[in-house]
Structure formats: C-alpha cells, structure tokens
Image (cartoon, rainbow, N blue to C red; front, side, top):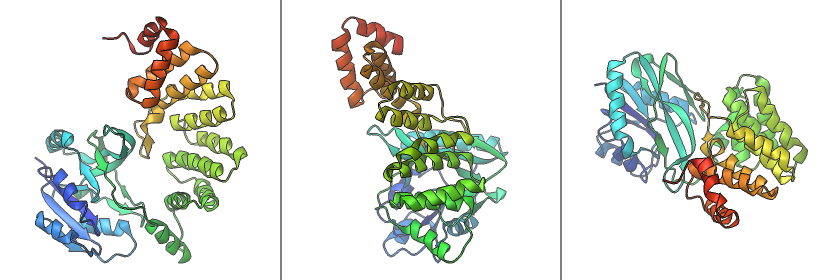
Length: 373
C-alpha cells in the first residue's frame, strides 16, 4: 500500500482544522502542517493530532509556503488540503481503493479530484473544479504563484471522482487584492495568470472598470489556459452588466468562441440576455444549444453543473410557456426535474401543467422522463 503525507499551510484555523483532520483519519500516514503566523490554538490542535508542525515566516506568497510544506514530506505521495476542506465519509472507501490502485500502478504521477466549492441543500455539487490533489513526491512538482497558486504537474495523470469539499467559514477579505496591489506597486511584471486573477479580485470588490482592463490585458497575452479565457469573457459580460454597458454584453460572450467550442454556461447567458430583451425565439436557439453540450472531461476551472443540466431546460420551459406552447414547456420542465426533482419552481410548474393539460400530462411526462414506475 502506498503511503501519503498530508501537507497543509495554516494560519488562525482553530475553528476548522480539527474538522479537516478528522475527515482524513485513516487515509494518510503523515501530517505536515506549516503555520504562517497563527495567534490562536491552531498549532496546538495540529500537534494534538500528531502533526509535525513547522513555522514559516509569511512573505505574501502562497506558492512559497506550499513548496516549503512539500519539502518536509517524507512519504511516497503528497496530499494537500486547506484547513476548511474535508473528505466526505462516503468517499473513504473509494480513497482506500485509490491507494490500492496506486500501489499497483506506480507510474501515476498525479491524481486529480473534484473540488466542490458550493453545494445545494442535499450536499450535491453546484460549483466545482478539478485540481491536481495527490502527487508522487519523487516527481518534485512545484507550486507557482504568490496568489491563486497552482501546482505544475506532468507525466501520467489519473482523474478520480473522490471529491474534496470546501467548507469555508471565514469572512471574505481583501487579502488577495492587497497582495496583488502591493506587487503591482512594486513594479512586478504580472504573468497571464496574475492578470486574470487580479481581474477576478477587482470584480469581486465591485471595481468593474479596472477589472475589465485587467481581463483585457490577460486576453491580449494569448498565454492563458483556454478555460480561463472563456471565464474571463463571461466575467467581462458581468462587469458590463454592472456598468450598464448593455451593448457590450453579447460581444463579450461571443468572444469566448475564439477559445473553444461553445460552453453551456455561455450559451445560457446569451439566451438569458435575449430573453430579457423579449427576443424569445433567438433565446430558445441558445438554450437549445446548451442542452446539447456536456461538460468537457478536461475542465479544470469552475464548473456550475446546473448550466449543463437543468437550467437550460427550465429556461426553455419559460420561453415556450410565453409562446403559448404549453406541451413543449411541460416537456422541458420534466427534463429539468429529472436533474433536480424537488426544485420549488419546477414543482410549481408541474402542478400548473397537470391542471392545464389534464390527461395529456402523463404522456408528455413519459416522453420526457420515461413512464411512471
């Protein structure tokens, strides 16, 4: 069986660290916890769980801190987590099976896992992305970037469905924005990735004009990952919306087609803008396009699964109902419900269609979802 070092960087995480460590008990063989200046009980909690605790002077560089943590690992593989991450108990058996598989397939250098950022009330993923989460120590992979750092990997990569859940319980701060602004003031040259994530920080702080400027600089480098380029276009549309630049919203979205085939979230947003403008038939076209697409298997950036499943069908339900095409509206509502059975709006729609369509309802339901069991 392979052995695993869990490597973490922490600071003032007493409210969440124990939950994280409890979630990986029995899965890892070594705890390496690097503290960057805690003033609470974080280090004591780590030590009480058998962790080897190291101090690292904070230099506004997450990549440097993570590389230091990795340098202290001694086991065959390295797993990295943040203090507000957890492995769900339902995935423990799969995690142990993964360890057994890696013991046989020694050629695998990195294992990606879905990183679930938000969930619905059932705990099902709403926003997620893939990250290289478990890596072979001898491969010597390095973290890059002071903020929104990434682990540069190569070799054989295995895509696992074991999910890491983000359970953020701290208030959102301007820490990352301040780090970027400090680096900018010092005259540092930003990489394409820096430009993109600085744009994100500016947008999150409602500095929309500045965000647009940095997204544009990012796209002009022609060096960004295609997923980030697409997301930049989507975020630019959001900035234009906030600034009431209505004529710039659709061009920002259409620009995303320069980087890859249409993505469902882009198609849905184009449809939404057209629907808001009461251009129902063009809106239907774009929502229909969205229903034909699937999430790319190599998708690494944030994915809102709803746009690839039930959202376009719910929007088509609305469009067709406005056109008076009740049966087609009902059909798409039923498909949407196959993805999200207890969504309040869909349940309301279902009752509405049952009353209007009467005996015809069950045949439409059957055509959309199969016969009632």
